[in-house]
Length: 369
Image (cartoon, rainbow, N blue to C red; front, side, top):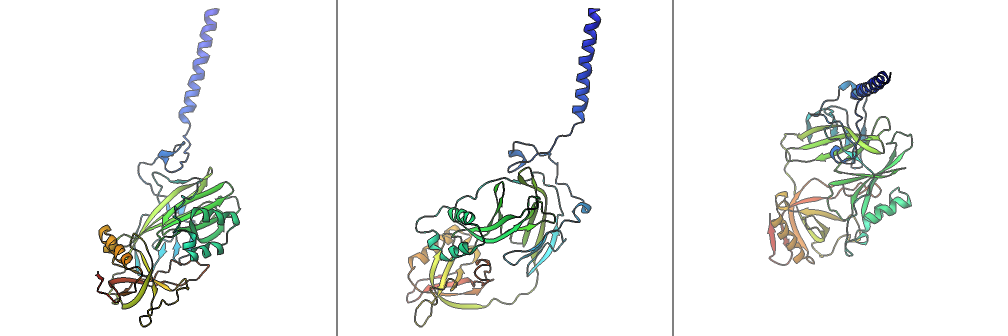
């Protein structure tokens, strides 16, 4: 009798283990998301061996049309017309794919831009005016002031799918000359979420859950857009789809660039070679509109110079050695810079001169490019 009882107990225990093992083998691992990439998180993301395509039937209803604060037009799911820019034509698109290592945007602050006492908000009164005129709350305004970022666009729409509009802000770091890194800050009930893209744009989705984020690169052969779709999942914005679209300059004979001769007084120059000049009247030698925050122009050597650290250093030294002089600048009109000013001030574009030669008026000091 005792032997039978022991055999029965052993049978029951074995049966329990068999049932548990059967159901465990049928269970599916739940993909969970990371703070940066799937390898850096507390949770796992089910990895694809390659970036697999998302069926067109699944993406057919995706929408995301926008004209951003720089006047560029995006239509994220319009094949071949995701982006429109004068002088460029569509080359290729990967279509929507599932990223192998999906990026996730967690809560976090902007990295503070360290400024010295001679290079701060008082040095950039026009940027401070933009900050003060931005449609921000007092707390938000103070946040950007403390971090040294200048808001350029402020929008409000739902990105967490709860029907409540969040605040989405594009900003540039204080003191940058021709900025290419656009920072995005999203204020939600849970905190701040930040991302950085090259000349990017943030675009509203069709259903209020998440957003599209665009990164724009300008290699020699043209323009490459990386468009990512993010969704709100477990208190983070998670990349669920991505595609790359390539454009190239239209091959046509362009009109010769117009040569100009300007007289200028240097107002700012960065160690990277970016330089601004006040207009100077060549007859009187006086600065024109010195108190006008828009009375200046860009003037820089060719890209092959500013891409060379040694030549850039020579250019920077030449300007600083003659910082109180009037310069005669001969060059050609490049594409005007229409990105510098925020919508709250003006849509004014600044002239952009590619320097052929620059000389110090009244001396034989000169640089040729």
